[in-house]
Amino acid sequence: MSKLIEKYSFVILFIVLSFIFGLYLTFSAEDNQDSSLVEIKVQQGDTLWGLSQEYGNSLSLSEKEFIEWVTSENKLSSHLIKEGDTLVLPVQSEDYYTEDGIQLASED
Image (cartoon, rainbow, N blue to C red; front, top):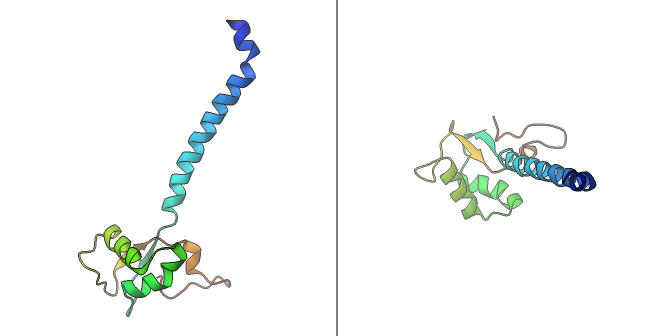
């Protein structure tokens, strides 16, 4: 038995390391999904429809899908939002900055 383990130790080590690496990739992928959510503070004149037109297309979501997602995730009782509300949006955080590093007005 020990000769068998000696003979295939490289293969056993490879399988164990592959398993560990697979677990790492699985859990790091879940963390990346959360990082694509950003919080914004609703400004005067913001609407869910306007936010969906601004950010929904970059996520391959229709306006309706974007609004439904935001309403559901933020536990809103209606599709109406008011100034000062804080919303979680499914948007890459770099979408909030211009190439010059200037923060866009819709995020506070």
